[in-house]
Length: 113
Length: 107
Image 1 (cartoon, chains in turn blue, yellow):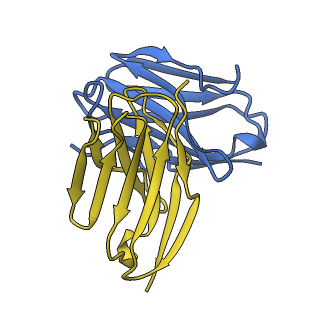
Image 2 (cartoon, chains in turn green, red):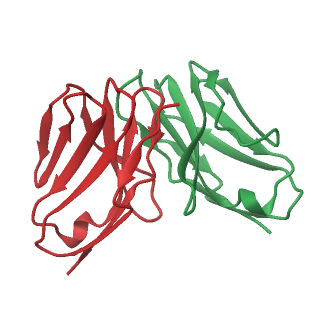
């Protein structure tokens, strides 16, 4: 397996634009997590899914953020409209069952100017 | 919400020295994981501890889970430059992370 695949690796966008980040989890994994990492706030859990269903989205900062998982092999995190304070590295991770190793993608570095 | 506090925030030591980083919470965890993250990469699992009082060793790394399952420590013996990175702890199924400890080992 190629591991967790995120795209794009880098994204630069202007304030107010819509941004969509994509994640392909490892095949067979039933949990998917989205994180945001900054120097100031560390690695923040935004939302996680189990069997494609959102379980906890309490970490989603505000209504501008939304996440979907239409099937077991794909998830998106959308920011609309984007703001400079959304600049961060966004990670996706997946794992099989509740307490096993989580595998992370290489992240998407988002810069909003 | 289960919060994990890690200390110290930063640690810089000379090659060959020992170090310990800590992960504490007021909540009880059924399990706790330690990850290491290198620049430009995602975190990678080092170990999972499940039983209160458990001690696990991974070469020069020793992990301990507190008896009450509220805290954990990571001890590195004879640190090497390759141990440099951000060490993160995460609790339970929700996989919420502490703020991490940035470890720098100088050659």
